Image (cartoon, rainbow, N blue to C red; front, side, top):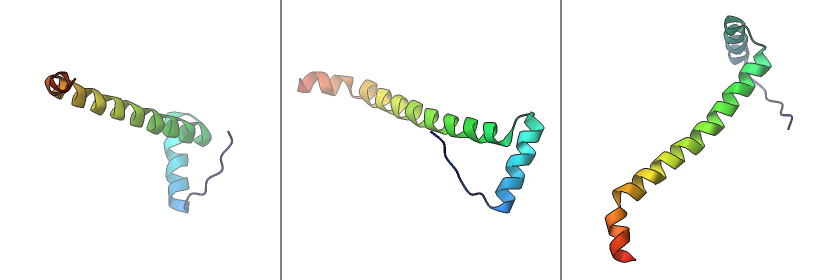
Length: 64
């Protein structure tokens, strides 16, 4: 999927500066940031769901 986004001048400058510091193209840095964000949300949800299930294991057993 191709995606086009508009950044403010300040955001664009910061993206370019950070990409240069890391030695990657700004497009690759933006792609990595989006990939990280999308992956983190799934991991956060999974961790929260597992915590709730562990915390309430006894309650769920009694209700079954």
